[in-house]
Length: 355
Image (tube, rainbow, N blue to C red; front, side):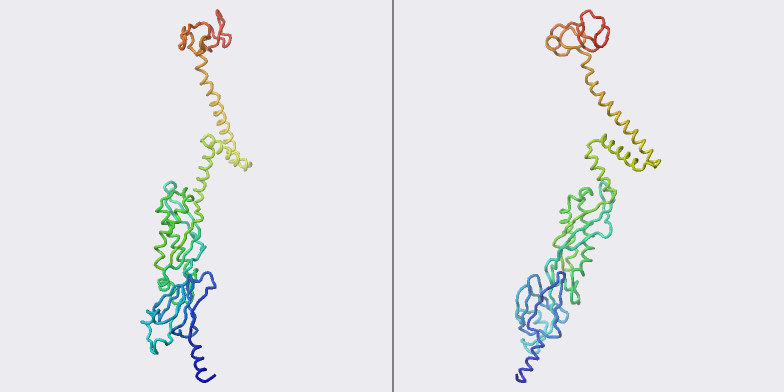
């Protein structure tokens, strides 16, 4: 090998002729290409893969941006760099620049949750506190803006570096979404999808100035305060029982069960006695109502009699049937119970009524 060949080999080793980046991680958002102290050779090959964007920075100033594809670096496809660079040795001379690869894929299954309870005003329960959690996904929407506003001068930016800001914005946006949707607390569980879409539209405008956007936002659960959950359980029990009488029976039985669980407690004994008396009174009232109802219904029929011709009821001591007009025997029926009596009898053989 000659002297000039050796010199040429040494010079070429100081130049970069292929620029590319393969992401071996799952959370890298921006990667600064390692130049290793070398310069980029004009005519070098730049390979940008799918879900990537390559950005050239010249002396701290953002220059050309390249989407997926293969490029040969030249003045024709580097218009901004051409204006910024001073080509002292002609268009084929090497140049210095920083190259950043921005990952534009979606970052999935990111967890979010409310660190502290969120206050909301409910029409039925007033001011209540709720907790919520779920998952979301995001990606870089504007690489130039993200590089300028978030990345700065670091070598690597990961998804964890921006999660804190996104989560705080999510919780704030969700609180606004719940308040503006005016969905009752008891109906929140049935409107997760509607709330998710509403929150997505409310949150994206807040994080778009950072160059990122949410691609999905999922609410997995919204937990209500313990007092509200107890109220829901009671309403469910009432709905299953059907009416207040049965609900009262249920409450009395529950009181008896609780009293029985503390047999040595005077309060428990008193509660058990009170519940027992209430149960006895309740059952007595129910029994009396059931016994009185058929008597009241049968009483009007007991005071009448029946026509021997057509069988329709007639009033006691009526002389003619109101239905067929047949003549009635006034003494043929007891005026008290309506039963047939023997003509000439002084007393009814059924009820003892004097005739």
